[in-house]
Length: 207
Image 1 (tube, rainbow, N blue to C red):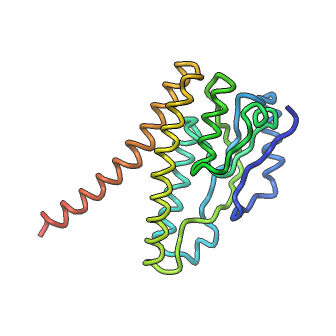
Image 2 (cartoon, rainbow, N blue to C red):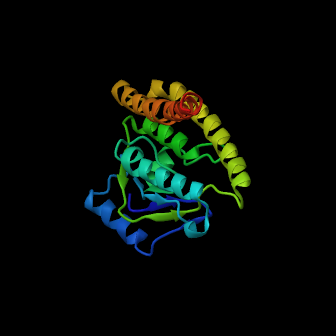
């Protein structure tokens, strides 16, 4: 229970205070080794001043969604997060073969601990590389690839959750499943379609 592990990406830049902030949070919450995962806010502003307007906007939106939805509603961790060694051992660690291994491990760990895991925010940001390209055209291509990966990953996560939900407490499984569907199915997908149709409507109707 005294050993913490941090999973991260290669393009991550940690604050010098990350370890001390994580340790303080863990001790302050009385070492919830099997019930809590620690997530630092991800700021996608790695060399942001030299990137395009699209990268800046999407980077800010992703950070806002993490701070406003993913962490407070305990929906899922994202890329860079910390957890206890005992939780990792109990949940058979993380499988990088999955598209969204961070959400997959969260679901599996909820199954082995028989509870909905809490995501506790570490008040220290981590810099992460945004999705971008050298030109607008390449940026669109990169976002197309990213969207395809996320779509496949979300379907994979939903299927994995349906299979593993049988081993979770009914209330915890229902609460997490509803939050997941609202965020990924309604907030992200539906809002994108609404924005696209609204733009097309304005373009066709307004003269």
